[in-house]
Image 1: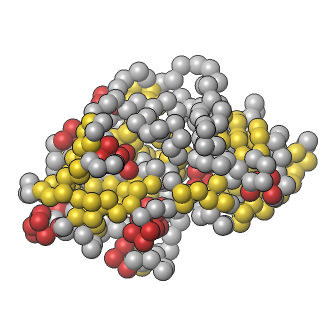
Image 2: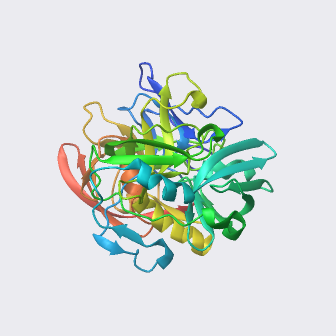
Image 3: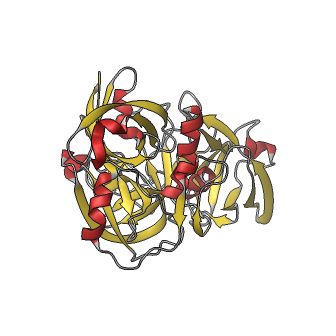
Length: 401
């Protein structure tokens, strides 16, 4: 189905009972349990909504996640704000949580947002220059005249203003007078998710259920986990976030959204965004050891764009996709006339097998790969048509959201 603005609403599930719920990890005034595991998806005029058949679960909202390759060594993203420099040297293999906790707590703040529709709480990561990054779903309730309060490690608090937000990437950048929070607040050190491997130790920091200064530890459970995380408090025409998530068993609960996931070197490798909850359970039911974070490498370019313009464009392919019967590739159920896919010669019925050289097995995976690029990028798309293989070069368009 296509929403009024050309975004797609998720189609009905293919069948079977969902095992859980992917929920946002913010504490909000309403229950935020969102079904994932859809049969159809739209990668067209707006947000691309896709199937997630492998999860058979619903993600709840504490936050979100993803991974983008980056350089090695200590560097900043070329052409971006130097205060967002990333330390991309390999991190330690062993974790001393007690040693990391003080700095981690000083670079994490609690966030409380209030608005006409209610209130919510979450966490944020302190950046240089009086900025804090968090999830969009943490502060969305304060849109249109609400209030955002930020509290530092020693309990002092001040108000924040919004620099920019994006629903498509579930990120928000805030301006904060850090001097009002005293010396207990210092900018976080940014690392990289590139090179993270399953089993590496990590810690999560935030304010779950409003309990500020909470530190939990675990390991990286999986990397490159394609996830669809919808914010049920958003309108039907709002973009849905898709993340190539870092999965962790470090306990993440409602209120952890927007807080850091750190490696054993104390560097931010992800932004905690979502948790898996039992089917039918509210988002408030808490961690079951399945948490998901947006990789910092994906977040940095988005933060930079928000700092510069207050908004960001996400890439659009211009097609609706559905899972295939044999689970190989993604079938384009329709192609938008005049859209990027159509301009490249793709047709309804084509089965896309790789996008940019990466194999895709369902609509969520395809959308995640699209979102890892930028509007204007030209990508190679391998596909099958009537038993024959082909390749198209698709130049992605974009939409602000």
